Image (cartoon, rainbow, N blue to C red; front, side, top):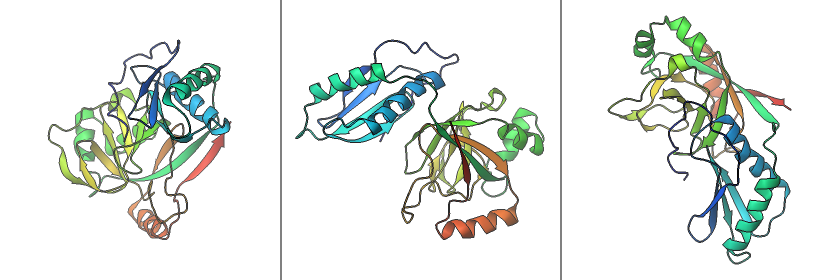
Length: 255
């Protein structure tokens, strides 16, 4: 499981220079590009991850992109960590952080109600009407930085500054599956019910993790997400379709 992400930087840091390569046990390396979170730095993570998908480095089993680093899992019976580190350092230098093709997901959200545990309070805190809060939340495209914490839990960046809100002082013991929430300067799409200190605006019928599907996960790092509101009747209909294994969101391929 990826480590808890670092504090979001107020301004993007320069993303130049060679990354640090750190051992993570005896069968994984972490290629760390910086100490903060910003889109340009994350682009380097995605660029290296993409390069590894098309470059057959010996012994590489899996990659795990995060906010600022890429974990590379390998078979130590095939390659030594020191040798792989040299290859990764070279590949990271070659991999351009230019714009990568990505998917823009259009994700339906039922705002407020039983799942929108903090919707009314957040509207009051921000001095917004419910409609204005929904419009502001859906006014930007959010970047998928990583999947972590729990299967399918999707960490998003790009929250409008006016909606930056600290997490709850006391986390709730249980929050709904599919929760759409804000935590500080981050947003998320939840997958499973569980404890959380994030502030919940509503929920989506989209099951970002469903082990019964051929492709269990919907989102991946480097995707973008755009939210749009739906009513209770439509949410019920989409819930039924999702229960049958349908991914109740569409995406555009960009680039």
